[in-house]
Amino acid sequence: MFCVLLAAAVLATPGATFGPGWSRVFRFAALGFGAAYLQLALGALVRHTGFGLAWHILWASSVIVLAALAAFTALRSGAAVLRGPALLLSLAVPLQLCLGLFALRVRVDSALILGFREAAVWRTAHLSGGALVLASFLLLALRSRRTSEAA
Image (cartoon, rainbow, N blue to C red; front, side, top):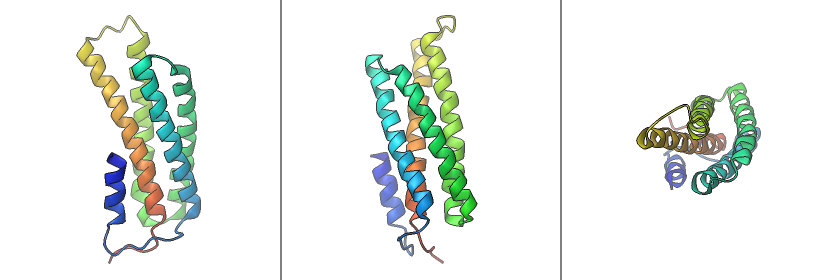
């Protein structure tokens, strides 16, 4: 639902027209969006069943690679409309990786004693970070299709 609201806000921007735009950036961002969506599904599997942790960790590498490709391509294009979403993606992915590593440590390390509430806060922050990464990919994909800006 968060991504639907974000897409509605971007597509309803007055004065912007959408067309072919920067197709290479779009391809990387769209693939990244799909990879991040699958990553969220794998995370839900881990969170609710306890299975699939290895797949969730392994698949994170594909999200990281696609985020790097999408952000680098967007920044290299020199398009002002892509700079913000590319920087957001560049910040969101490392933040999410750090939150994920801490959530993993909370899950497997019995020496790290946290109460239920504290552990839930870190896991929820990791879940929210995943939503931010997904939204960043979507914003970059939509903005990469923008061909003009409002004055």
